[in-house]
Length: 435
Image 1: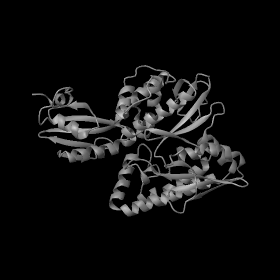
Image 2 (image 1 turned 90 degrees about the vertical axis):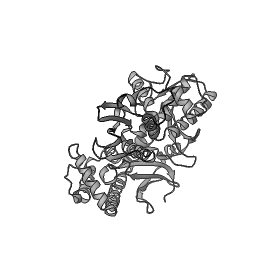
Image 3 (image 1 turned 60 degrees about the horizontal axis):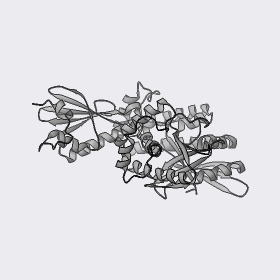
Image 4 (image 1 turned 180 degrees about the vertical axis):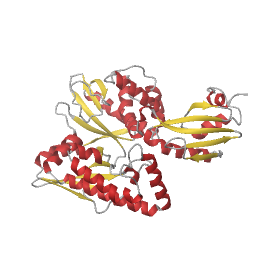
């Protein structure tokens, strides 16, 4: 009789599974997730499902929903790593699913953006621009060997290959691969206007001649020798995608406000986390797991009070960020130039948004860049209609531009909201009207 380890790992490709095959039913139940067998004994087989680090908790939820729908006898466990594990009973044999980060612990956000950046570049430089489906595009790209000119160095080749392997694990695989088809259409149209000699992926290292802080995701070298940076976004036709993704900690560091950051950290602890009887180093590596357990127990017993604490913390942090932006007009404009626009005088930048399997050009950044030299007054203030939105109002002699900003928790449960602490996510969502 086959061991369960063999039973799970034997190659059934091209073979019609026997009726009632536990392996077949199990694999079908957890699609599109795949696994590796970590260990196996007569009593227990331990499987590992890998995904982007910030998606592991959601993957566990998804897998358990699928097991429930398929009527498997399972238990959701809090043990087995920071994400917990899932125990499934197959008669006298137990299958234990653990959830581990993919290579490098990459976030799903990074994995998703790579699909819209790296995939179209590889396809274009390998001679293909037309694909009928996301699957056809992915199947083509995963077979590309070596470097068709897209990678700047060997480290990026290694990183790119790991990303490609992990892409099907993304919860937005179909959506982002569809967006990649849209980016390919842009590259095809651009090539018809001005022939492209090479496309570089600007993941870590930029190609020669491009500043290290350039905001481009792809860099296109034309046969004329000119270079163009392309910043890629993805979303709906009428949506406003973030044109800056940063965190409170980095914002204060970028603006040189170390003293103000310390005041904020202290205030958040004194008004929020100390009230839960957490130590002042609650988010240190040594204390974080225990602290999250304490926060989770509070949330489960007092959901309304928990949400009230998060709202209080959010307002405290939002006010502090707004105060930082109002300290100095020069410092704020410098921040916008360096961190929001990240322009490179030698290599121009265009912003392209993939919309489904097509694309459109974004003009907000060009408008903002042209307006900055004329700004005479800067005012940051909070939205009265939303607890997470705020604005930076830029005024010249006869015109006003409003930068739509937001601040909120962006970590997966249970590391979100109160457990995320002061270091919330900050986004610039384009030019608009204050609401």
